[in-house]
Image (cartoon, rainbow, N blue to C red):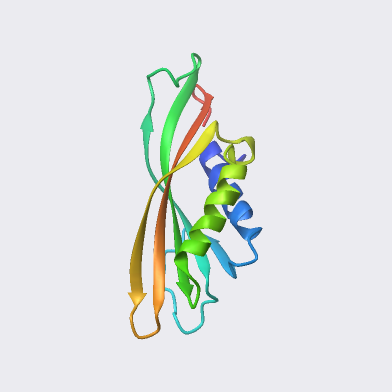
Amino acid sequence: MANSVRQNILSEIVTILETLVTLKHVELKHVSPVDLDTVALPCAFVFGGADKKLNDDRALIGCENWLWRIVIEVWVKDVDPEDILKEIHDVMWTNRDIGGYAITSDRVGVDLLVVDVEQSIEALLIDYDILYRHERGQM
């Protein structure tokens, strides 16, 4: 069975992020707890969020048109999170059509969190809106 457009988008984002030498580990949909003592930092996890069907001027007749929220979660230690954010922003902007699977992608927000105070591990939650489409009935 062929991958869906959504699966291709997520896989392509992982591939794009893997081009950044700063990131030592990139993973799709990490669901189990991460061992902070063994994970290579900085690292990134890519998650698909909620999507919304579009019926406005961005919609193309004959297609199902979607706006999909993707979250890139980045954990850093001994690195300025702003430097990593810039690198991710730049590489995602350069690849804003996500390998041709998306019409466009836009960073719409970022939150900075502290993961572990004792180990000085910080996290970035970077939100992207991905506009994509596929033929009706063919995801």
